[in-house]
Length: 211
Image 1 (cartoon, helix red, strand yellow):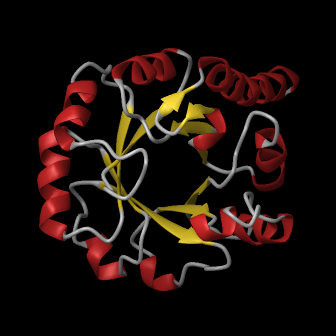
Image 2 (tube, rainbow, N blue to C red):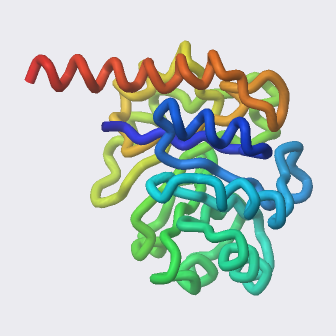
């Protein structure tokens, strides 16, 4: 089944609801310039109340390695997602204690130097989203599909309306949604979250029943 990560969690109500309706992972953004930034102390309060089977992902952007380690250990993260220009050696330094997700932005494509990392996330830069280029183009999605031996996560402008089309094109390991299920930055819309997850689960159910 395609996994679902809900990113930009800032409060306990959203975290609990998302986990209850089927989210596999929750993302906490530790980048102070983000409108969805959360302090480590607030993130810890939320994470301490989550069940053991929810994956906790910390999102960092070109952060000092020592600060990343301190936050990850204090908060209780399972996965580190690097969303900036982090080098392969920077990413490798956190292995094997943490699983790593490295983000690549259109039209950037990963080189083999990141081979130790088994999960790649593909997104669109904020500047491009402001130009209404909010989802990855079909040609790029097809290129992503050709990557072998990696878990692929698709992000960038996902909503309940377009997620099925993306899944059918790429068949990714997971999808990562943030603004597409929000009322405003940092506050999730319960109906949109439920609809997003239900869309994915319905496809998987049909496939299972017909196999």
